[in-house]
Every structure is written in C-alpha cells, then in structure tokens.
Length: 112
Image (tube, rainbow, N blue to C red):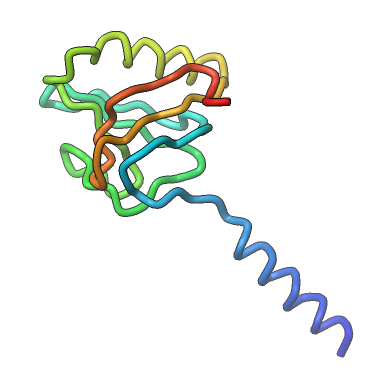
C-alpha cells in the first residue's frame, strides 16, 4: 500500500512541475529560446521554455509560439537578441503586447 501511495505522489508531483506560461499581456521574466522560425510573411515565431499556451501565432505554427510581426520597427534588433540568446543558451525576458503573444520588447539575460 505504501508503494502505491508513493507512486501516486510522484506522478502527481511530476504532473504539476511541467512548466508553461499562459498567454497574456505582460512580461515573461525569464525564458529560454528553444526554436526560432522565419515565417513566409517576413516575421519571426519563437518557441520558449517554459512553453507558452493559447497563443495565436502567425503562419499557423500553433499555440506554443510567440510572434514578432514584420511591421515591428525593431524586428532586426529583436531578432539579433533572440539569436544571441539561442546560441549562448542565455535567458530572455519578453514583453507580450496582447493575449495572442505578439512580441513587443525583448531583454537579453532575463529580467531581474
């Protein structure tokens, strides 16, 4: 009986420890860049860890991708920061402008 209780406890604990971030306006204080996608419309999609949920990404990449749209005035600078974070395995802080996960600002090194 004790072994069953321990197994159930471990399964429940692991289930609650899976990280994700809900899609909403505001800062994601610290995240790792997992994937960067250049989309056909000239924008960029970014997958993070912890994963986002309920995003509306451009080009149909799904609910786990934040989007940097091609009309953003800082797209090249933000793209450079995202690539730097990805290549150096450094965290970033990302400001999402709305609940669709539209990227507005990025800080290399996370937000302290």
